[in-house]
Structure formats: C-alpha cells, structure tokens
Image (cartoon, rainbow over all chains, first blue to last red; front, side):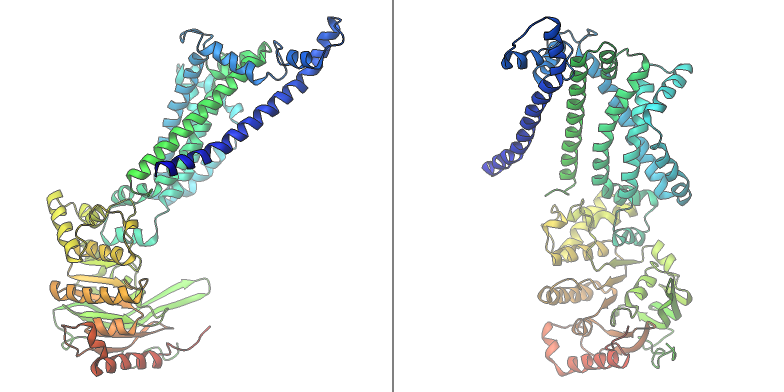
Length: 297
Length: 280
C-alpha cells in the first residue's frame, strides 16, 4: 500500500516538474531575447565591441532594470526581501504578503458567508430567486478596477479605514462563486431524498441542515477554491488606490513607478505562491471534510 | 379513454366496506397532470379500500398510475378530483402525524450518514431523545438482519442490504402503515426472492398494513392478501383479487396450483386491461 501511494505520488509529481522546467527554460530564453536591445545600447554607449555570446547572455541576465528579469534574479530578490529582512521592515516581502494575505482571508471569509446566506435565501424564496439573482450576476460585470477606488474612497469618507475597505473588495469578488455554487448545491438533492423529508414532516430548516447543506458540501468547496484565489486578486487590487502604502499590490505599484521590474516580479511570484497555497489548503480541507462525512472512500 | 370507468372498480378489498378498521379509503379519486401535450389522466375514478393488517399490491404496466396512487396516499401528490382518507383523515393530516413509512425504489439513503444514522434520521426530525433513537435503531436494524452494520456507510453495502436499511428506516418511525414503491425493483431475482420472504415474515411479526407497488406478478401474488390490477390510459383499477393463500407462506408456495391460479387471473386482468398492447 505504501509503495502504491509512493508510485502514485511520483506519477503526480513528474508532470508538474516537467512543466515547471519547461517554463523556466522558456523564461530564460525570453529574458535573453527581451533584454538584448537594451544590452546592445549599453554596449554601444560604453563603446564595447566584440562581446562574446556567453558574456552577452550573462549580461542580459544581470541587468538592474531588465524588461524581463531572469528567474534567478527574482528568486534572489525574494530571498533578500524575506529571509534577510526583519518582518517588521517596510522592505520585507513577508510584511507586505501578510497584509495582503490577511485582507484576502478576511474578505474570503465574509464573501463565503455572504454567498451561503444569499444562496439559502434564494432557494427558500421564489421572489428572491427572481429578484436577487440578476443583481448578483450584474455585480460581476462591473470592472473591479473601476469600482475598487470608489469603495475605498467612500468608506474612507465615513471613517472606515485600514483592512476592512480592502477586504470588502475581496468579498465583492469572492461571494459570487460561492453564491452560485451553493444555489446549485442546495438544489442538488435527488427527488427521493427531498420526498423522504416531506414524509417525515420535516421543517424547511431541518431539510436545510440534514439534507441540503450536506449535499451542497462538494459544491461549496469547489466554489471556495475559486473564491479564495479571486479574494487574493481583490486584496491586491484594493491596495492599488490606497496610495501604495503596504501590501503586495503596493509593491507592484511602487515597482512600476520606479521601473523596478525585479521587485514587481518578485511580488507577482509571491502572490501566486500564496494563492496556490491557499487553494491547496482549501483542497486539503475539502478532502478531510468529505472523508469525515464518509463521501470519500 | 372513452369508456372511462371499467367494470370492476366498485370492488372493495375488505368484506365490510364501512368497517372502521379501514386504513385507506378512496372515493372516485382522479388525478390529471396538465402537461404541454395536453392533460394526462394519471388516475381516473379510483375506488379502493385497504383494511388494517392487509398486504395490498398495486400491479400494472408503467403508466398505469400505481406509483402515483401510492404518492397520493403519501400526500406527495394531490388528487384533482374525488376524495381519499388515510386513517380516517386527509393524507396531509396523516403525513403530518407521520402515520406511514415510505420506502422508495432507490434506497434513498443519505451517503454522508452511516447506516445507523440513516435509520436515526426520521427520529432526529421527530425530536426523540438520543436513548430512544439508539434503542429504535438497534431494534429495527436487528429486524432487517443488519445488526453489526451500524457504522458502515451506504456505499459499503450491497443493493439488497441498502434496501433493507431503508426499510428499517421506514419502520423506525413505528407507523402502522408501510408504503413501498417497487422497493425490490432494482434488485436481481435471487436477492428479491430472499427479501420477499423476509418482508413477509416482518409483516407477520409487526402486523402492519402494507401497500406495495410492483410490476412483478410472482412478487405480487406471493406477498399480497389483495392484488389490485391496474391498467393504463387512464390509470385505473381493473380488478381486485383477494388471495386465499395462507398468511404463513414460503417460496415453495409458488409451485402450487392455488398460487398459479391467482397468478393466471392477474395475468388475464392485465391482458384485458390492455396492458400488453403497444401504444404510441
């Protein structure tokens, strides 16, 4: 059994490693290609001639403000700004990551709760189904980049500052998949399962707790995987109009002001690592919950 | 469609129609579904009486309304015409007092609940104490020979065992009336025979009234005290056969002339009710 699992683990890891390697190779090639024009200009200005190919490649991968930083530049930037900096420092990427992460998590929790509450209201009330659902869908057609500054400004003017306004933007994005997924999930029980509740003269709350909610669990977790990833996006977008004070979004904005492409890319990589980790955690909880419920063999 | 009322719908399944022990009584009951293709007469002019302790089978081809009739009794469908009483009250009132247990064709066990917790489900809804619930779960799982499977999840059980668990769940409510909608229809014949025998023993032991929907002639004849032969378009009662077989039966009885005579009469009824005709 253990060997079987190991084999399966290897089978699962190899494709991922292969893809990552391919991406890194492609990234290096692209970095050399994209940074070559600037490097040529530099050589020209310095009147350097007859540069060997190897030196040229090395130089393109070691520019201070490259068009596309090489992977090792990003890695060393991340290393410098995480391990080598105090967490309390404004230059620490961990400090900024934590701000974005806490915003995203708060927004995700509020969004998930809001989504569940909306879904329950919708399946219990035909009028709400007709009146609420179009607005829920319409809410997502508004570009978040347009509405985010408004939310920040409006909330600021009534005295709500700090984490909460940014978290609301995450909530605004993440409630949607949860609401839609839960409506589908709460309506997923078979007719015989709902008929059974009717024969027991169960109240709608009992039907909700004992039948609809458990049936909806797989739908909830699928929705939550989408929701937590876009909660991260929401948190980053929410940090842009706050004047680039703190957070990964602020790092992105500051980086683009000063042409610090390495800083931008390290923030980007950090954001995607965080998002991937969050999705992985939701997947893990999903497996644990479904196993606990006896729905995974 | 044109003739409307078949010749034998006036027949009652108990000797004394006004007997106060009748559990189900319908009077000129009809149910018409309005569909996009026009009205569908699922049930037409059903007059039926089921006495306490009877084992009544509804038999007929698909579309004869046998399941619909069972669902009307269970208040899962509402009749469009006529009247029906269950335990002397409307089906809705009967349902609200949990007067019956319903067994579906699919076991309809909740996959996230163990067998014991599935059986406990109606008891939780009824608000019984944990002690009472555990006691009833134990007793009813024993009754269907599923003691020892309490902690198993439904997927770990065979189809026949799942259906037995769902019967235990229906019995746990302790109703006097058991409504069963083709409970063994999805099982193979060997398992079905075995469960038929067990069901009969259970019925003997518990003295419940059973209404049983089936499309199997041997099953209907083997189990029932009364066989209601139904025919389609519109769904109606064609014949009611009172079985004179002894209550205490084993599977061997299916070889006897008495058994075969009743089976023959059921088959004749189905043929005369145009059940074997090809229709569009």
